Length: 260
Image 1 (cartoon, rainbow, N blue to C red):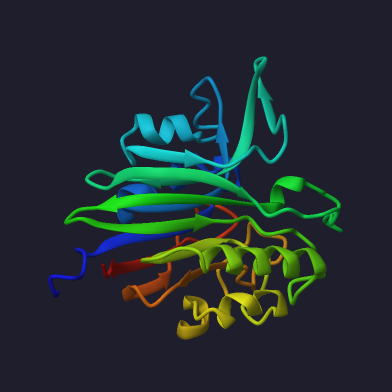
Image 2 (cartoon, rainbow, N blue to C red; image 1 turned 90 degrees about the vertical axis):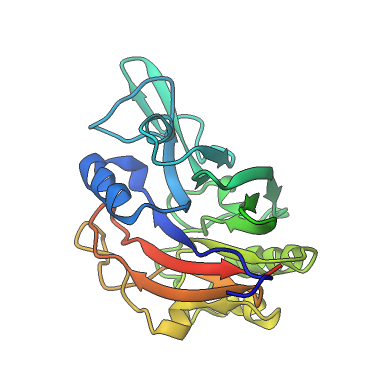
């Protein structure tokens, strides 16, 4: 390690499927000991409703992470339990000694474009941007996005073209290490992801030949629609698909350093 690189950290990308597989999630968190979790479909609400569902509040209470940032709710009411409402979000979690410097939600300005899925949600057009402070004076931009769901559009579609063009334009305004991840609902070959490649980001699924990152809980188990993209300020030591059935998506796990 040079004096311009951070210490290594473990980054996980996971669509949590509303935390409905509570005990497998506990087992995964205990095993992997992630420093950063970029998650989609995370529930938040007033009560601990485990083991039925694992909420963001319970994740923090159990000490798996110390900080969390939150995107806009996907729907006003995702779940009601005993009269209490729980909403679903993209969230980014971090473990001490990492610190939270800043967070904001970037609206990608859909300009009237709507999803063609049977679950149209305008929140598919948001990007959660979290800036983390790493030990040693380093920082990193963590970008979290849940892509538009079009069941027959895994190779590209109009809302995806719009979103990833806007995301690429936004990333070009940033300086320093960038990690973009999420359940994009796209294959790595998707034409909608082209703007990310054009600005020099690397898709770790491409580099490592990942084609399967789901399981038998999924309606289509033999696919990989979640991704981690990095810029040249991120050095990857290890990348793999964890075989923990803690969701209908398998976790993507990256061990990396960042350069100042």
